[in-house]
Length: 120
Image 1 (tube, rainbow, N blue to C red):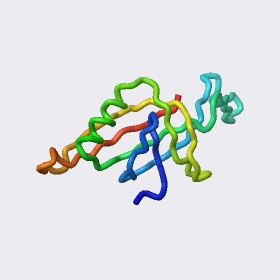
Image 2 (cartoon, rainbow, N blue to C red; image 1 turned 30 degrees about the horizontal axis):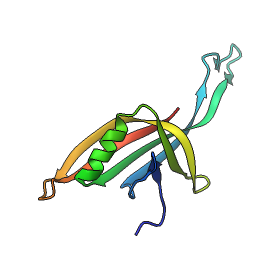
Image 3 (cartoon, rainbow, N blue to C red; image 1 turned 135 degrees about the horizontal axis):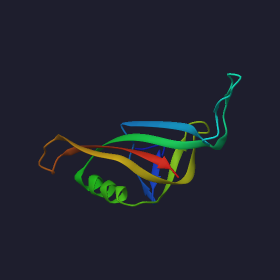
Image 4 (cartoon, rainbow, N blue to C red; image 1 turned 180 degrees about the vertical axis):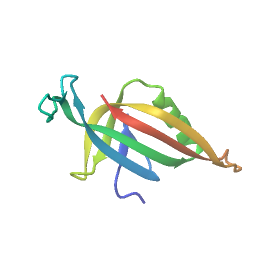
């Protein structure tokens, strides 16, 4: 039984991932950098932009679902914010989508699917 939702993409509550790596980064303008005095100046355009790397062990049915989602250019995603441990909703896209066959079974295999979710 799953106690916590980590990812809900387009209303699909995904199962517990094998790994969930959330990173927040700042987006800086080109005007930042090192000054003549040698100090660093950062011109932050956006702060705390989410990037999530996940890996799932999947049935063929879930592989098909995730493959369809990877073809969409804009996704509504609710993800577990590790700072508040609450779900946060944002617009994202899937990058670096990869599928590997782990084991061939009579049920069309056990698959490993990994991808990154990048916030717009």
